[in-house]
Image (cartoon, rainbow, N blue to C red; front, top):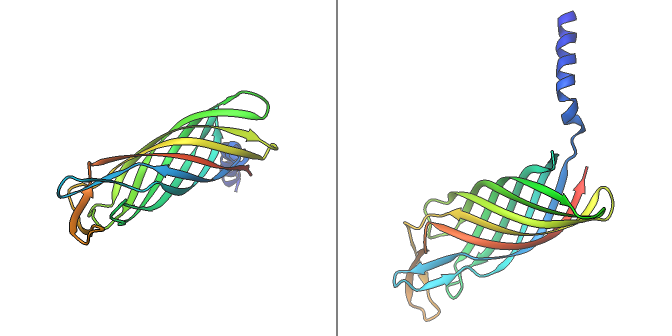
Length: 194
């Protein structure tokens, strides 16, 4: 029994820092632009700019934060109206720079994966990364207004294509223009500390 108490004491001492860690949850709403497809005649079509949603779950780490970021965009291809849904999941890290008692600026980056739900790609999973910058305005110690801009990039399958219909009722075959797409988002949300 004496050995059991030592183990409990060691585990408790090692986990004391993590028990005090705060969880920071930031839901976002924003606007996402970027991404191109092409048809068999090399005509290019953009993904329509549309609203997007995101959620960051983080904890404080030294002079910044680390955690997970999830974002999704449901849109379509201009002219063709083929549905396009892109989901991102990143491990992210950011550094915070207090500018006043209530205002803090930050920059960061993320790395992870994406799921591109489109009919014209066979391989729907890809590597993804992001850069971000923004600011937080603290209303209280636990609630802040958060705004950010973010570049999102992901590898996509541009080797396969699918049949589509143009507004003129002609059929076409579309695919991603390249094996990498760039998107940009502007987001606003709340940050809540628990």
